[in-house]
Image 1 (cartoon, rainbow, N blue to C red):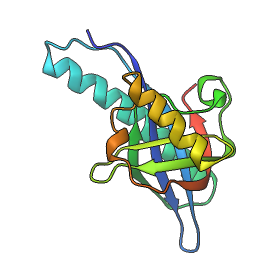
Image 2 (image 1 turned 60 degrees about the vertical axis):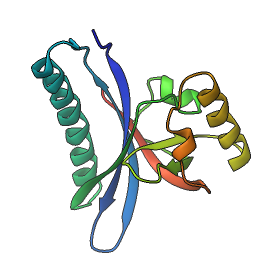
Image 3 (image 1 turned 90 degrees about the horizontal axis):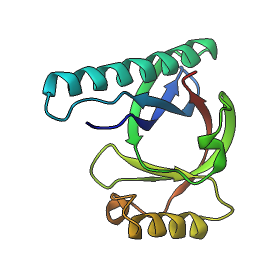
Length: 148
């Protein structure tokens, strides 16, 4: 069985004059690794949840489009991502994968601290995309949301 997993999805909300990034935390349900149909079901459940959250915040805030940018299934730096708060604006460091729609992110006082955290996560067996992340990271204001 593949366990239920938190995924963090980065979206860009757009209107005619402005844009805003959001990160949506949603859970992909557990599924049987031996059943491709069950895995597809779990992926669809997750994607539908995250897309509905992004579309709702987009419409609520006067944007006319929400575009999926990238996904993260690792452990971001910052306690807030493991608590219950939602719909809050925060500044995060974001680093994108050089080729694929994946990203790493977190809250830290400096970009050096952010990269050190990702290196430690990679060394411990997490953050497998670390070697393929593009530098420099970008400091970005985002709205963080999570499913209820």
